[in-house]
Length: 411
Figure 1: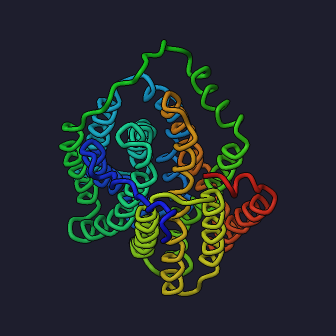
Figure 2: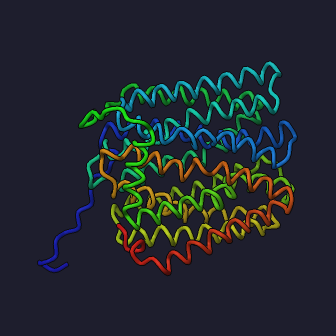
Figure 3: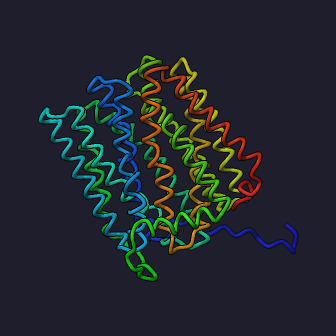
């Protein structure tokens, strides 16, 4: 380094901020439950009730359906109400639903209708809490720590992607499906211990209550007025109908229907995906900041779409495991870049509502894709359904990457 070059200064690790650290520990417990839920409900339907991949798709649809109707309202609440209180209430609600389902299983009362009701209630708690969690991150760390905080939060998400299905499978093997739901209820309760200690800065201004349409319009206008953000949200929406449900839902049915394994063994590729995401998220955290994040996001999406296409073509479980690890490595960049770009380009007063819109596009629409893919898979097979969805996603993101230089340069 010459004398004229300034030393590279990396921002202080976001975990040095106690409020963010408390939220992060809570998020580990919360995300473990969130990832265990999708796996356990699918496992219960496929192996416990002996139903088809179409029924699995319906249950995952109902688990995520509340997000389509509640996250925009929750985002508006997050910009106005006490965010800590909202998290506490939704986490207590989720714990109660899990405990109630465990009691019903123990009593022998659980049929497909009960699973549907339980998934809707669990999904409602998640839908209200998700945009609040995302909007809190910029409020708890300094601006230069934002990408570090997002990467660290992604590590919590990926730890849960690894631990959620694996721990649920271990508990289920020992204590049955009843035990898996008690496991989730207990983790929710443990997470509350960190939320109780959390101090959240109040909103700088108190906004007058307005209809949800007006509140959402502000967030939508912010996104639509920025060409790069608009394209980014478009890609996220497309992924929610294709790659995301193919990987997170249909692959579980593929493992059972075409690879000859049990649905519970889907915990292993999910864990490998989580490991890959954790590795690449750690890389992002160490780098602190990166140029051309929009290009990194799209490249990660191309790799992920390609891996998903190949997953649909697998004929052996070992092939799926290798692809899952690579998928996770790309997924870490995908998650960190898209959320970081949105938060870095959104003003604080709009953060809750924009993150509500983000939650809708990244999670709230996925149940519709899962339902469609489940029904398509019953007609043409899980492998073709997965590969077809991935091919659509790959074609769209490659076209966007070539034609939209502005998004490639977004940071």
